[in-house]
Image (cartoon, rainbow, N blue to C red):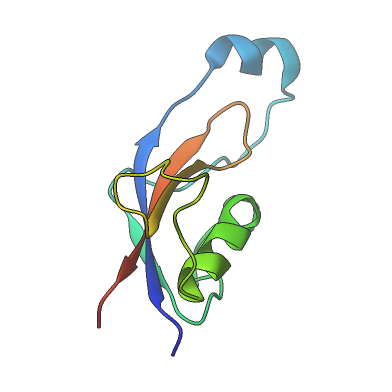
Length: 102
């Protein structure tokens, strides 16, 4: 039976200097709020989670859902977790992923 994986936004930052130098103005940016969380079931992208953020963590979520963990031989205190950031270089969001019990 696959594990459920909780994804929690734990930090969001912005780099205004990089935005001013490289980014074209865009009307809509990231809606993720610190503390917001989602539950992935069967290793699938949770509804409402940014597709770009999902692509940066999908493999880790799938592995955790399949019972795999201990990434990079002891990287995390909780071996059934991971800390990842989305791939937005201007306003990255860090997510804590963890296997949860029903």
